Image (cartoon, rainbow, N blue to C red; front, side, top):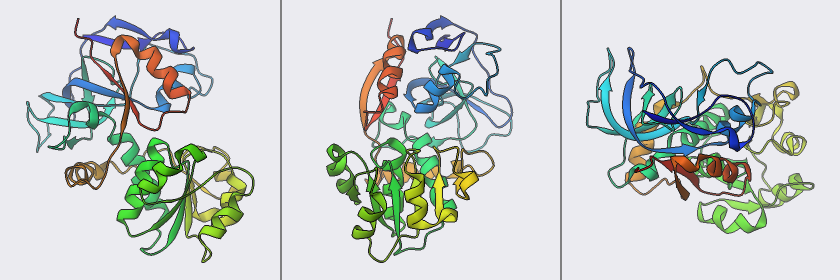
Length: 302
């Protein structure tokens, strides 16, 4: 099969389209014929070696961590899904390829196509996980720091569905987007705590940090135990919650996300669609941190 991988750490130019062996599902896994794969910040952090902990690259890595497609093989012990079903979910060992393996998945929403569903899994799981850690009761107000990014937008929507009020931060150019999702927008940077306090005079029950900045201000607002970060490695040392998934993952939310999309109550916008062969450009766009919608790669037709 054709896949986009890298054989050394570096810039987007290290990505190459290559012929690689097809994977096959083991127990508890399924295989999909990939119709679309979303690009996430984690993808280029892995590509640069930022997630390697200084360890050398031992083998080529197929880029990507989530995709949508058609089930074509089902591993032992898998129930509730069959070849021919359309699904989306996080992938095992790469997504930008002809075929990919999934251990968690949700049914493709009936009102969605493969491009739209390719980017649902990672942002919704991450947002749900942070909200579970926060545990804020209905009626409370929370802060979503970095509200215009993929996880931020998902967190605002899922928080509002929980009955939470949301103050969200972003560049002023993205304030209309935040408001359209039901959040009170404000800018990040110095003075953040005062600006949030003016919007939420009764105080906030917690803060979700997707940006990795302004940690002191968030702690001043909510108290360290009520700050959940996915982006600031210093958070745990300050008494805040730092989560990257693992045992606390929330992949069980995916079927509910599919239902919410069908009901028109949850959305993940797509900003750009590119062919696999332009994966380097997709990574450049993601690294610019200017995209407010998902960047999606689709298999080349030739």
